[in-house]
Image (cartoon, rainbow, N blue to C red; front, side, top):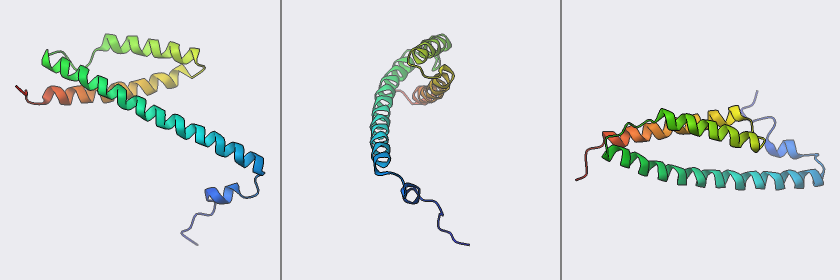
Length: 115
């Protein structure tokens, strides 16, 4: 037995037609670019939600807003359907983000006042 993987990515590419390999590489580069854009968009979104969290904390508002969350989920499901993306997946993705935002808002609310 060996500790080395038996089927590395390089091994998997051996024997693949060069045209297919080039197209696969191009598609993967596009995916990498999209992933980078998603990360940057999420960073911007979280900057905005941090500001919301500070505003809520200053005015003693609750970290969660179930009505807003339901509206956002419905809106995102509709956008997903229009974009031919599974609305269930989109809802799961947004629920994950919402949970993280609420966690941030709770942490902000727990911070001592800065005045």
